Image (cartoon, rainbow, N blue to C red):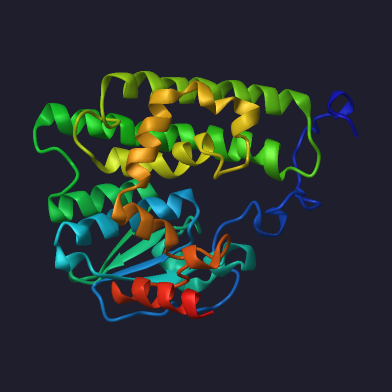
Length: 288
């Protein structure tokens, strides 16, 4: 059925799979589908995630905290395979009733605190450890402006453009054009901001950069959706400058590896339980 002949029903019903790469995990109801306890490691912070852009935000933040010498930010990162439905297990739903990665459990407080939604996790960790969030009202507000900008904008990039350009079973002109236009507008918003500032919220590296980098640097450098040529991202020089600078940070390079199960084997660390895991990973790949 073509776009022009679809007749919108008076009442929508879920009578067939939606199609596309993630059709097997899409459903119109919430709650767990099966009983499954989550593993728990030795550190106070337990992260359950996958290295999608939303997951990478949090592992970057945790690695940046450790890079800064904040030992209390040590964490265990457990792999949640969303294609296999791990996020619908009872243990995961208990931490995040929305069944989306990432989800964090902070056992350093009593009772343990659950934190879900990637932006909320970044803000929680920034406030808990007093890092990567300006203390002054103006700086804090500007940082949060951009953090919430990312949270509001990314669905247009991922669920909108990314779905119809990369994952939908059929390609249609209208949705691809509609979302490509919006994504290019968002890239231009960032490019203009970064023309005047070293980092997104100013001259200081903050959680705003950590939130935005996995999504927008990924698109601009062709790491997400393979659409850089289609979107002509070479036009956004200031964004590319920032993408390169942030991407070279040691904590960012480590954070990208955690809970990653695709790409070059040397860039994958399926689970992370100690900083030495990165060294073991590199050694294993050299010997392999």
